[in-house]
Image (tube, rainbow, N blue to C red; front, top):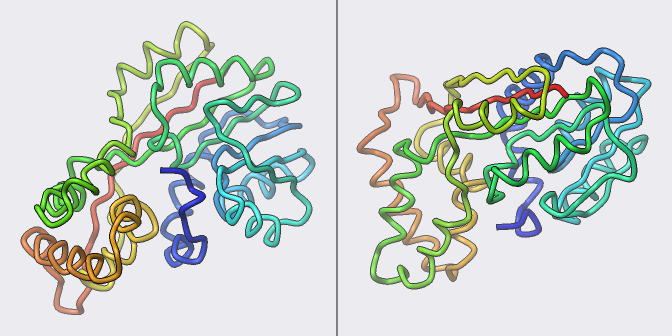
Length: 258
């Protein structure tokens, strides 16, 4: 599913929580002298802003497949350049010191081809920095697939299961990138995001994982889908006394330096 179908305002409802992994990824990039950086899948510009602040003298370009996202990012950062482009076919006009991809590569297939291709666009000492949600086996996503199998809409929405790529293991990505890079650093972290009850979980994933399913349903069906999804979430997530639910959210990080 392309981000052309995404809502910047929905995505930014949890801006601080979504930006934390982006900041953690950027802090692990070893390059100190970045002159040209590209934010791959820049979204509404929250991650691009982190890059611009860390490297204030660098030229920063953000690309995204959604014109709405890049327009929002341009409003946020008028001093940066933005372009509508698909990462899997995009190539820069010159090599970059940093290619940064926060929470976007999980939507793209064939990492075995794509990641080495991107490394080929790095300048000497440049880094490819990637962060991807690794949560397809979490209860939130198992529940999505279970609800999608309902006979009322299964012939239409089960195709949404294929919009997310299966994430490889750390060993897979290390073996993939090590022949092309001087150093490859990989780690996995589980964040625990405090959200306002089950409704908070639903609002979170309306900005990401639920969108491929909901976009294929009419208004009444979306309501029914979310009702069934809430019932399944209730089996796995119990609000605390103050109504807060901690959402476990595992993510894999890769910093490959050429």
